[in-house]
Amino acid sequence: MCIRDRYQRRVRGRGHAIIMAHRDFSWMQDGGVEGVPLSAEMQQSYQAAAQRASPSSALHVIDRFPITQDQWDYMVDSTVAPCFLQKGMSVFDAGCGAGAYLDSILRMNPELDLSVHGIDFAPGLIDIAKQRLPEGSDLSVGDAREYKHVPSDSYDVALSFGVFFYFDGEQDVRQGLKELARVCKPGGRVMVGRMNTKEVIEEIPSHVMKRNYAAYFPRQTRVDSRTFWQKEAAAAGLEFESVKSMDELYDLHRCSDLAMGRLRHCAYFRKPKEEAKASNQTRLDKGGVGCGTCGAEAAGLRCSRCKVTWYCSKQCQRSDWKHHKLSCRETEEAHVEGTADGSGRDTGGK
Image (tube, rainbow, N blue to C red; front, side, top):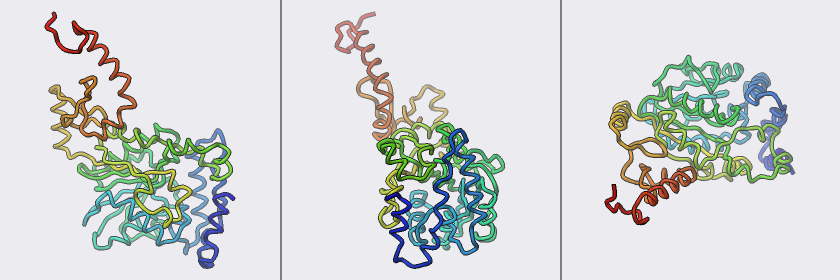
């Protein structure tokens, strides 16, 4: 039984409205054309979804999350929590679709008086978002990989949820992260939400993938959650905070998200304040040592083998070991060979 059939079976008995809301799964066959960039195919697919949507359709259903409103709100609340929303903050959503994520944030946090901005590559979805989100919401057409019309250092929280896997490769993911970092205010938070977890997906046999998943899924971009974000944070001008699998953030059963939730994760970052960045750069310019993983100021953790590379935390040290171990061993061997007695101690030679 494929995922589509399992889902339709699961909603039977919950009421006619839910069944009707999720009856059209034709979009699961989109994005399977080889030779055409997945991003281009999905832009057309989402534009078609906007044209088919009715005024009564739930925003998250238009955005292809076939769950109930309560389940969706729970998913949003759980994934945005590490961004620490506070009163008066501004939130930017790259790839906002019909505005479902922003709508949920606003409805669940009315006391915070948040302002929201979103972009999406499907003009029809932006039209729906403009009609359905509160007046004053700043919504425009744009590609989540680059949106020069959005000013830099403008938002307290910059996020993207369920979008980056539609990009055409890891380089696009890097560019998307840099854009989120660019529009985020110094001291603000960045989230890349619901990204494909490479190390999990690669364990799925190809015949199972073909039989059980949407046509576009095998072509979606995926990254190694254990190393990718830690490596890319510094290049984007961000401080890496954490990577969390979806089941660490919320109950997959409660969201009817067992099929896809177990394959995805969220990454969280903080953009350093300007004074912290300047201080760190001055230290590096003077010969100071930065973390070998994220580039942040090292806090005294040095590799005990090579005694060359420093880290700001145990987490950064562990995440870098896969890449560091080769150079570490070479450095250690060179250090040993360069001593008089091979012990690694300085014996006072020239």
